[in-house]
Length: 203
Image 1 (cartoon, helix red, strand yellow):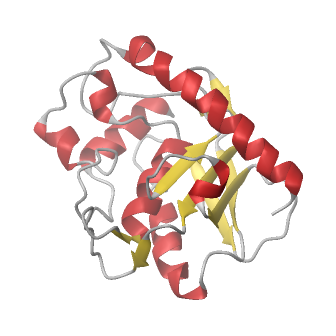
Image 2: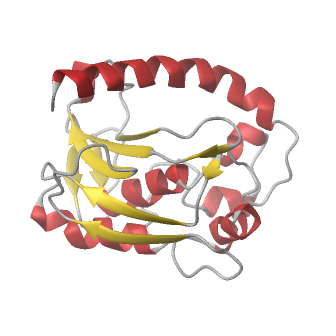
Image 3: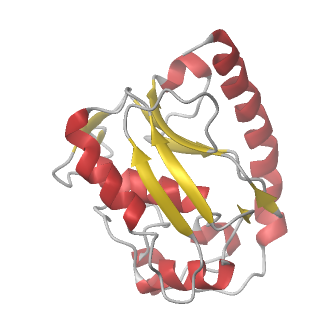
């Protein structure tokens, strides 16, 4: 990763921290059932680039996570790819793996930078934290810092698509709690009807 990229991540984290403080206020009062949103992609087709930092053994999990957001009834969004081991400079949509403490990122398994709190965006970066123990077996353990690749990837790609955590908009209902966008450290590899409803209303 270049020095410029590191500076970009740090700047994005600062911006993200400021936006997070306002996001709840902006989104409060939205309807339930996955209508808790941030911004949306400006266009309806984007290609996902995956950096060489993502192990080859994760390809099925990452690809499966991306395709969970395609072909949703009444949604026009289509994600293409992934392009593996991409060296393309500044792609519009990228998945990478970095050591979060080095960049001042929160101590969480994954984070998405790029989408604002409203309007549209044309760029999103999904980062996975090397400071966790990753698996493709579905194991999720907060106490042991064990995370399932597909569970985290499908959640972060949901953020890239503009969906927020349901509890950012108020008390979540049972459908929202079951959705991939609600964080409760359980295996969630596939989008639910609630996630799909959010996408249909967003695109």
